[in-house]
Length: 180
Image (tube, rainbow, N blue to C red; front, side):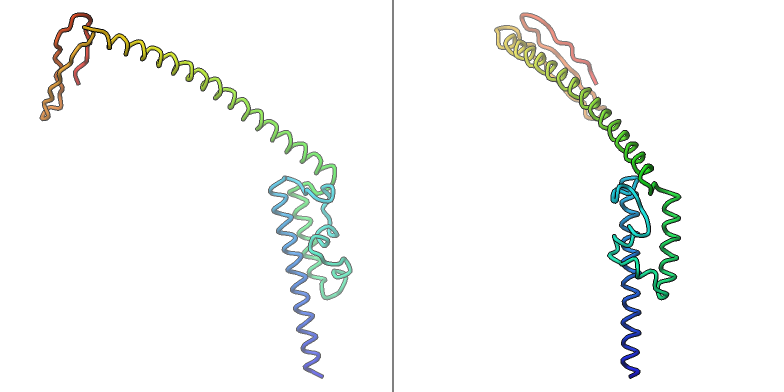
C-alpha cells in the first residue's frame, strides 16, 4: 500500500511540476511577444490570469486547488509586474498598436526618402558616366589621328623616390605631368 501511495505522491509532484513549467513557458512566450510588439497581440490585447492559463493549456480549476496555491500567487505577482510595464487592457493595447504602426510608418517614410535620394544620385552618376564615356571616345579619336601624340619618357631615381618626366615634342599640343 505504501508503494502505491508513494507512486501517487510522485505522480502528483510530477503533475505539479508540469503545470508550473507550462505556466512559466507561457509567461516567457508572452514576455517575448510584449517585447517584440510592445503590446499583447492576442485576445484583443487583454492579458489576464485566464489568458495565461489558456496559453499554458492549464485549466482555471487547477489553480484553485490547494496544491497550486503558491503557483496561483506567483502568477498573480507576475501579472501585476507585467501590467506595470506593458499595456494589458484592450484600449491600452490599441494605443500601443497605433503607436507601433505610427513608428513603422515613420521609418518607412525615412527609407523611401533615402531610396529616392539614392536613385537621384544613381541617375546623376549614370549621366556623368555616359558623358565621360562620350568624352573618352572623342579623345581616343583625336589620339588616333596623325601627329597628335605626345610621348612621355619617365625615369625613376629609386633612392629618392622621384620620377622625372621628359617630353619629346610632337607636331601639336603638349601634356604637363607633375613630378612626384
